[in-house]
Length: 199
Image (tube, rainbow, N blue to C red):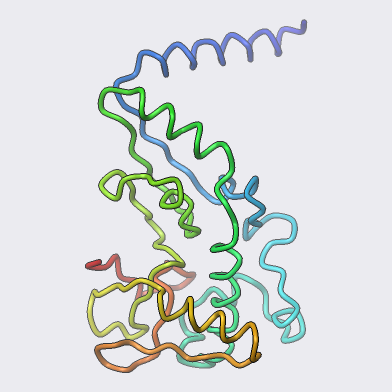
């Protein structure tokens, strides 16, 4: 056994001892957490690949800008509707369930701080009071203006996505308060309109 592998084994053993003795756990996760669920990261291989963007000469980071909801809401909703369908279909991998089991054995439990927008922590029934989705969620909507700090669930997007799959048309979702274009409650690049929300 090499020095590096014995050091690694010792470090893993130390971490296991600490976890077994811990009263609580704070989990910080980002895009890499979704890879084993089949979700691409925006920087990795296959990131943001979508033929419509490629044909238009638009890369993923350019598309993830809230200005598209004003400049071309149809393209914006075509892209974000696709993201919503992909994230909704993906299932949390075993790592989420392992962390949930660890948390259940701790006196205080665990808390999750995530920059992921896929909603997987919700799918494993992580408590709302123990979860902070720092970059929001593709499963919530907000006004693109925004006219308020209101956030609402994607029930209308769910039905619109089903219709879009069969008809090929794209529904432009609207804010129920001011009728402006709605958008996902997701922190995008160059985003001055993101709201944390009053769910």
